[in-house]
Image 1 (cartoon, one colour):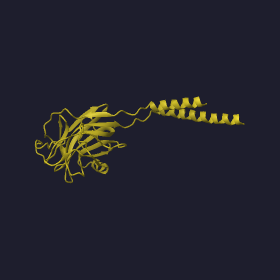
Image 2 (cartoon, one colour):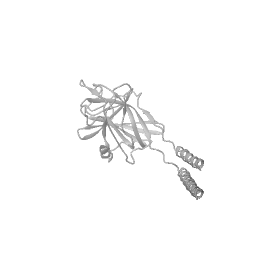
Image 3 (cartoon, one colour):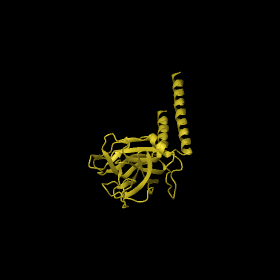
Image 4 (cartoon, rainbow, N blue to C red):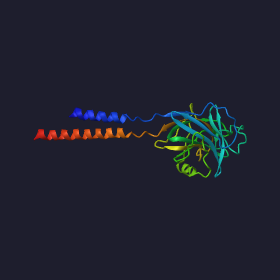
Length: 252
């Protein structure tokens, strides 16, 4: 009886393993060579491992949301807002919070979890600088359009959803600059990555978004797999009940 139960349990474990967890995917934004300024609201598309992301640059001037230029550079994506001219002065074509509040909006073709990001820091002012980040996520239908990306409207419901989920993470200034987003369980088809807002340490933050590590939404088992698992559970239950009945008869 013990061997039968062990066999059924092993079969259930094999069925559970038949639906493996989706592997993490790294999406790199490095290797570009764009101008430091251009038409605000441009969108850059990147894909890897079945995940496609459409990135755009934005900035808050106080409470006013503005489209910005998203540049693609050797060390990643950067933002040039309307207050930064052509973006060539003091690394102001980075994602920074000096003056205005810059961020990159990432729209995905599926809901994902961003596990971490490489935030390559740049000096943007004479005072202390680092790479703390402002992060948020949300889910909203109709954001991802292909093959032609569509800009998110300034009056979209997305913005209030993002403001309801935002938080700040401390950047890593050591080698590699890989920053954990402390985002276990957070899945969204839209993510915001910006310079720290609020900015607890009061250091000016400036970085280029070099890469992200994303986890796809866990796969849902196929109906046939569920059926096999239910049969397996039933077999385990039957085997255990039968074993108990035999034990009772032997004691009698």
